[in-house]
Image 1: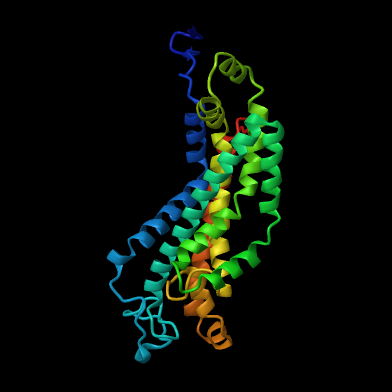
Image 2: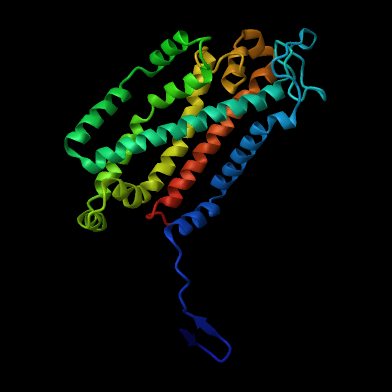
Length: 302
């Protein structure tokens, strides 16, 4: 509809074509400059880390006594560590390992937590009580002690990186399960869920086709928070010597190798790159998570 206010001026009152909730969320997220900048930086870090073998050909394990603790130069952009290994090369390979641990643990945690939370929230009753008591047990389990014990038991016997991912994942899904359960409990009371149940839809179909798509935004936001937490967990455990095996470079291991007074005080090029990489990556993930949280929130009106 158009309203004419003069001979040469018209006001167009025709409404814009409606957008889906996901399209509105995407549009709102793109307008968030901080979140978009963080996402671009995060994607860049992932690309250069996973393409490390094509970016540099320097051996990450070779110890060169003649190149110990060299300052940054044209040959070694970020210098070398106390074993003569190129810091830039180890930073790229270390990022690949740390990000791999973070992504793997996040996927496993979201998968286990979503399954347990969905079943508990949908069925309720004794099923809910049993699953939530088990979840409480997992949440109250001494995480650090268990990781240290398993790392000691399986040291040198199996792939230490796989054990680390499994242990972190199995002890971290409880929070996701509780959040998904609470969302499912609220969502299943809606009329469309009751209608689906009344026409004979199986529990599996109701959960996967109707409930989970409507709590997906919450799961996505939780995944970003978990991603940052998993990287921090790997870094902390590796720094203490109970995370990624020392022969495999990771950001945590790089900090652990620099944990000496003379390195901290007089050789900052050894520890500052991994410290900055961890800090900026965690900040980027958190900013992306905040942007997603704001974009997926229907009450947000930026």
